[in-house]
Length: 248
Image 1 (cartoon, one colour):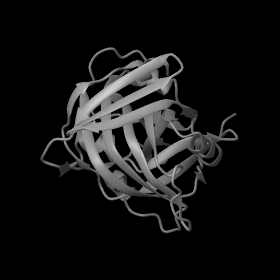
Image 2 (cartoon, one colour):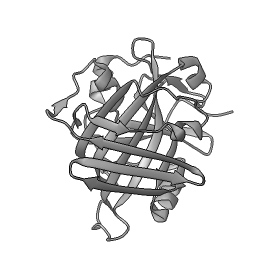
Image 3 (cartoon, rainbow, N blue to C red):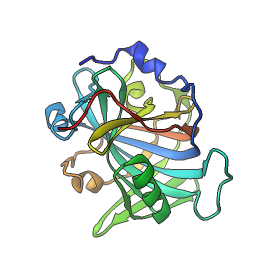
């Protein structure tokens, strides 16, 4: 098992040398992070994945954002389908080869077809939820509800916008270009490509940790780290089976 080094993390930002399958645009991303016990996170991971830490610390992240202009590589966007809202709960992992990425506990969207396709094509734990978002002056009011669980977030972009410096905690948390998933008891990787996130320290006036609670984590303290990014344009690539993580 190799722990990823900074050079390997930087290399993952390079565009894969193969055709993409999809284009997406991610807007108004809020990154809220809670520090969590690395050993407890490790117990939730599949065979072949290892908790990724920064200075010995592990993190859980809640990310509400807008999905825009979602379309396959050779087709145009479709009104009513290509734009929706999403919120995910994630942690940070690496495989035995030292590839650093993201493990998703849940991804909620307010578009039923997006949920169905994402579960079928990318084998990710998507759920249908009621999500609304509106902009009031400079504030984004974002509300999520699934069954009897609900959370509200109010956040606002601040200036200046910068880029995460390699080797920092900001870089560790947001500069991730690999996702891991399970398919037929095998571990797969999915690659996305985009320019580095333009980020800022947002003004967050409302937050809620219930999204962590329904996924089995108890974090009722305020988030220890928060960032926001206004937008990135994204290419999505086919899943590839990993040489690590074959499940028994």
